[in-house]
Length: 225
Image (cartoon, rainbow, N blue to C red):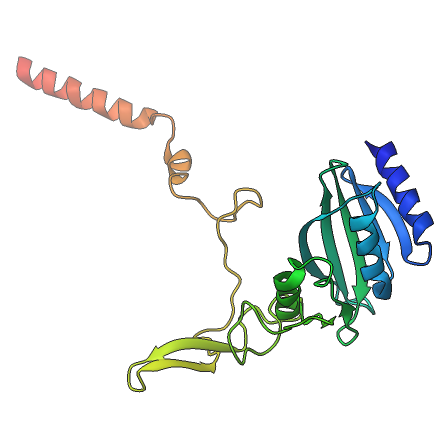
């Protein structure tokens, strides 16, 4: 399997030497790191070349690495039914540089590019209708960015007086705390329910047994009298 993937990687690199940064094999799948501006040329080669035929478009997703200069990775997954192989194509971009859209080659990329824009703010140049897909109108920020607050910026509720849904700034009723969810892997520093029996159960007290025997003997002696 890996020899076949390696040959395909070498074949693609020979066809588009100025488009490929690196070709690696991970998890029995070929991964290509490509130049951002060459993504459309590469996808066209993968789809149309008779020795490749990666004509089945799976998805596009984004990955955020805030510590990098180009913080976003755009990841494409394709399937070749003819070769019975999958391929992963990755490129890097920043918050302002758009990525060429793949909609002209794969119409199924339409909503995936909108999702990446909505969740990460990744721009796609040439997309016919690049707007938010999952969040509401007027939503601020991009939820899957690592620097997006977990509480968000606004909260939604239904207002009985206005008879409509209203948006308000997030108000926390209490300070954020560190909750202990009784993780069995990390261990706990308190007694779990039921464990207190192990500490209270002791061996029978001999002094108690002796006192009971004395009481029985006294009753027996009184009965004889």
